[in-house]
Image (cartoon, rainbow, N blue to C red):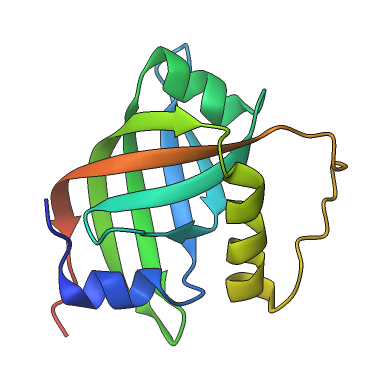
Amino acid sequence: MTLPGDLVALLHKASPCFLATIDPDGSPQLTQTWVDTVDGEHLLVNTVRGFRKLRNIERDPRVAVTIADPDRPGRYFGLKGRVVATTTAGAADTIEALARKYISGPYPWPGGRDQVRVNLTIAVERIVHAPQW
């Protein structure tokens, strides 16, 4: 799915993003995260090997995502989709690029540089909420 221009514009800004995955018991697990798109069709999220959201995605790739406008937080997109690829290739570079966008500097590596970063590629299957104003 080609993402709407308004959404792509938010993805290129430091927009708050909330990613919901499914825990083993079926309950939702919600994480605030950084997000981008590299192709205007997929979302790109970066995480760490062993984190709960990644374990959930490995078991069930379905996700829900909310991306808010940092300038008008009541304006947001709600999306449903699935993770279609996970890779460690280039993931350390991705977190550095996301840090430059979100915190205007290098990633501080709070868990240490020995963490294995993982890129998640999310295919959007449905837009369940788009701004009306």
